[in-house]
Length: 160
Image 1: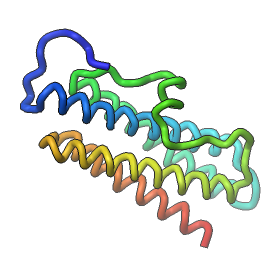
Image 2: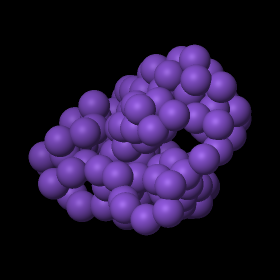
Image 3: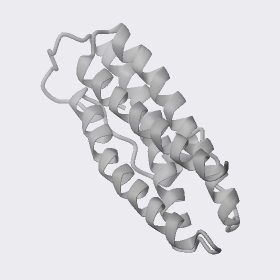
Image 4: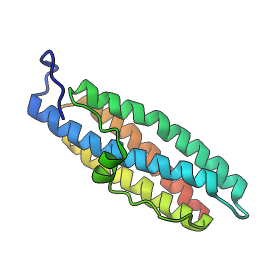
């Protein structure tokens, strides 16, 4: 959804800004869902890897929380409203959350899949942003790709 006000003239057409903002909205929804799942697992993890996972999850959800603002603010800079409700996130996100508290090992599996899902969403959004010469969005998405691919690798390493 676009906001009304002064026309935006940053060298990207209204239509292209709308397409990129829609992709960023999916990115925000996936990122928020992953943040919430990671924070939930931080609170509820148990077992022999408790300290390792509790600390790792906190590091990851803290970084994810900081990123949410950058994604939402980029959507706003493009002249659109950022989604910000659970209902919007549920509609836009590609990540499914568990309905119960999983085992520590299943938490790791779910977070690997969640980080990979965010990476795929970022990659799709990057293609749109790059295609319309939206360098700030492409840069933001490149940074997010690096973080989520690294997180997935670190989590996967715990399972080997």
